[in-house]
Length: 342
Image 1 (cartoon, rainbow, N blue to C red):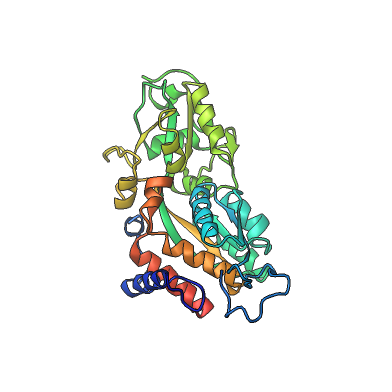
Image 2: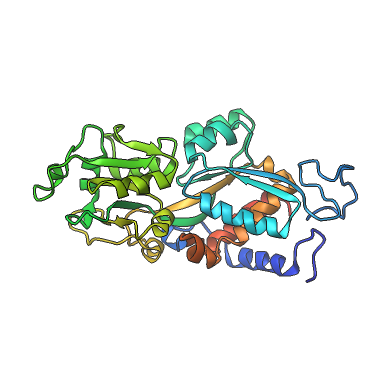
């Protein structure tokens, strides 16, 4: 296949230009969104790899560090594997630290090139980054249907409203299932969820729990398998995580349908419902590369690859998330090109 002067295939470059051409405009709504290289190798480091993306005989080389959301983690892993297949001299490290944990401990201090997040960056986090000379760039890359799940032995509830969920998950809230509905068992909840450093925790607290705040007496973890195991262990357990982890374990746990208010119809968590916005706990997912890291060719090319592939069908088929829309991908690519000049 013919390559351009950067080592990219002509097919890849043409696709990028097509995405940019069909895009433009403001940020797409959630329903719409869910709706190696060198300058000819002349200045290659004598050792073949200075960690900044200079190239040797085998093409693009260097290291990219991605931290952040456990929800976005499977997407970034898949992107890493595909990118490294094409660029075997590149190492992409993907670490699941939680959205907030990634910003606070890795990305804003300048120790990571990209942070993945299952909610938008907070003002305090952006200020932290700015204070360290790190400029985050927001790129919406997929959509998710946050899933509330229970044990497969739970035969008394199939659907819950935001108000009921808030009563369960708020500080000082309900203690037993019967506190929510007198027909339900008079047994205490056994609650499992993401850690407080998680963007999933933040999104659920802001959009469902509300001002009362998320209760602290639950098992919090960044390992979603721990939540699944907890739900398997008791008929009175409840927990929440990204749709991708539910889809992987659909035979082990039971997903609840959700309605935003008592007058609404119950909606099942599915990728189609997340794409159309008919599922009330649909949410966007993000990556945040820094402008400074994007000046390194190895980072900018990984991000370019990530964005060009963010509309791919395999994101839904293999990792169970809603791919980005063409318009959102083109907007992201335009932002990347404005920063890198390439």
